[in-house]
Image 1 (cartoon, rainbow, N blue to C red):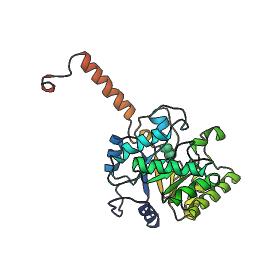
Image 2 (cartoon, rainbow, N blue to C red):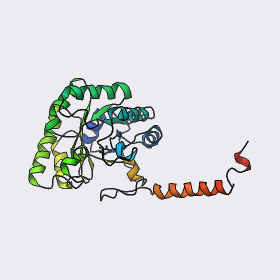
Image 3 (cartoon, protein in one colour):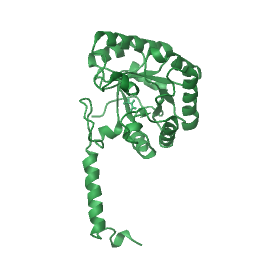
Image 4 (cartoon, rainbow, N blue to C red):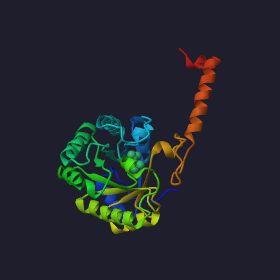
Length: 272
Ligand code: KIV
């Protein structure tokens, strides 16, 4: 179903805030390379996130911790070369901003200068307040990320739903308010109860984009490879698969192998 919406030639951080004010939901997907970014942008996505989930999806690591700033810059600059309309947000990887606001600013500047990205995303609340403030002083837009923050997986121990207990929910609400007051232009809320996410979204003027956070927020984000069904092992309740590309691609590869072995490929028309 197509939904009536204002036509934006280019999406900016201001467009997202306007969408929230106009009750238009924001669509966001990940991309890490030129070809995927081109398809996602052409389809009309509002935001591409060059997520540090590239560490899992592209490099096969178990967590997002190993990916480096140089690797994120490579992914983000490939995405930027593909896009014409959407806003591109780039994750600052683990170890490039926590506990050192000078390093945080330097990392964010490298992202902006070397990739042409439009904004950065950082995980955490009050504990990274100084890093966020310092990045903002350089005029770099910052997206926050609360709830399940995968860079802290070894602190949480599991990838289960966050903020189910009152104390954690209270801290999350305070952090969300603080991120807005600091000047973040938007916030990702990952894997938290839908009721809490809606409460946070309603209490802020900046957009709250959810992943596993229900429908009461201002937009949704998914990892593209998951929603296309290219990954098989990851089956959280919140994930809607729009295709089963794992099966489709496997069948195509098998067919190609058979065609090569049987000398069906290339045929007369496929050679010079
Ligand atoms: O890295 C990522 O893909 C993310 C999304 C899951 C929000 O941070």
